[in-house]
Picture (cartoon, rainbow, N blue to C red):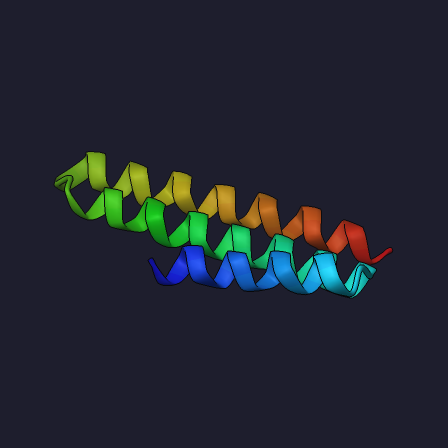
Length: 73
């Protein structure tokens, strides 16, 4: 719920004051929330499956952050 609120606030800010900075903040919020959700899903698993799940979540987060970093250029 907090994640949806964070994304909604970032979307609202971007809608009212469109800018590259607000677009990055929105993208960052989406990556952060997606990572949090993925980690929660991984907590339901055990052993190697959990480790693989966490590793995949971290890889997706890193990819998202790299995409955001590319937006800055």
